[in-house]
Image 1 (cartoon, one colour):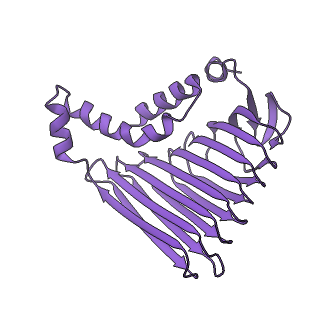
Image 2 (cartoon, helix red, strand yellow):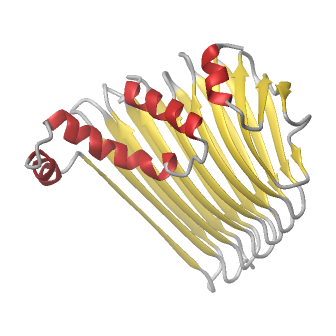
Length: 291
C-alpha cells in the first residue's frame, strides 16, 4: 500500500478492491445487511463488474474513490437498494489516461431511498451510461452529477431515469464544466411508464464553458405515458458571468482567483457532503490540479 493510499484510508472503515475483488478491509463483501459507514477504494486495470447490494432495512454511507484506473477499461456497476433501505453514495471517478467506459445500473424497491452524488473527471475519451429504475412504491432517489472535462477529448454521458411504478420520486441535477478544447455531451432521459400515477420526476442541467474552444451539449428528454404525475426538465449553458467576476475582483481577488472560486462553487455540493476529511482533502487536491 502506498503512503498516499494510507493517508486516504486513515483510521476509518474501508475496503480496497482490485478489479472488483477485495484485497483488504473491514468487510468481506459488498452485500450490506447492516448499517455502516465505509470507504471504497478501487484499483482497476481490466474490465470489471461491481455489485453493491443494500439489504432490507440497512442504512449505508459509502464514500468511493476510483484511485488507480488504467486506460481502455469498461466498468459495470450495479447497485440494488432493497425494501426500507437507505444509501448515501458519494463517488469520485477518475482514471489515469485513455478511454474509459462506465455503465451504472441502479434499482430501488419499496421505500428505498438513495442520495447518489458523483464527480467524474476522466483524463481522456469517456462513455458513461447510468440507468436508474424505480421499481416499487415510495422509492426515491436524489441524484447529482458533476462532470469536469479538461482532457481535450469528447466525453458522452447518458443518464436515464425510469419510473416503473407509481408513487415514486426522482430528482436529477447535473453540473458540467468544460475547458481546454474539451467536449461534453449530456443526454438525460426521464420516462414515466403507463400506470405509474403520482410519480414525480425532475431533471436540471447547468453547464459552464471556461474557454472559447470547448463545448457542452445538453439534451433533456421526457417520455410520459401517464397523466396523473409531475415531470419537469431544464438546461442552461454559458460562460462565467462577467458581473460575478467583477463583483469578486472588486473585493480584491484576481480574475483567475475569481474564476476558480466560481468553479469551486459547482463542486461544493459534492465535496461538502464528504464526511471523511482525508477523502475530502484528496478529492479537492485533484480537482484543483485539473481546473
